[in-house]
Amino acid sequence: MLHVAFVRNLNQGQRGHVSTTDLVAAFDDAGCHDASPFQSNGTIVFSGEAAHAADAMCALAARTGVERKVFVLAWEDLADIVDAHRHADDAARRELTLHAPVRLALDEQYGEGAARRRCRLLQTEVGWTVTANERDRESNATPVIERLTGAPATSRGLPTLIRLIDRPR
Image (tube, rainbow, N blue to C red; front, side, top):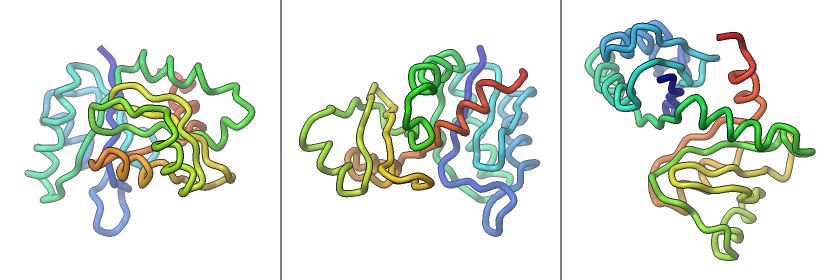
C-alpha cells in the first residue's frame, strides 16, 4: 500500500537538519526500498505499512542523532482530501495539518483559537485538519493545532499537496 510520510520540522539540507540521502536511507533501513522524497520539507512517499515510517524515524535517529516525529496518511486518503479542497476559491491559502489521533470539534472554542492566528478550521477528522489562512503566503495551522491538541503537529500547504498528488508516479 502506498503511504505519504510527513516528517515534522525537517528541512532537508539546511544547517542542523538531515540530508535527503540520510532520510531516504532511513526509510531503506526500515524496509521501504522505494521511498521517494517530495521537495525538501520532510514529505516522502513509500510503499509498505504505515508503521514503517516510525521505524524509519528510529533509523534516522540512529544514523544522524536527529529525532523527529512523523505522521502518515495512505495515498488514497491524501488524494481524497486534496480532491475535496483543490477547487476552492481559497485553495492557495489552505493547509493540511497532521496531528495527534484526535478529532477537533468545529465549534466556537476551537474556532476562536484559530481566528486569533488568522485562520479557520474547515474540516477535521481523527489525526488531521484542513485550515484556511486569512492571508496569502501565511502558514498558521501548525501552531494553532499544536495549541488545540497539546501535541506536535506538522502542516503542508494545499498547493504543495496538489503538486504531489498530480505528479507522475
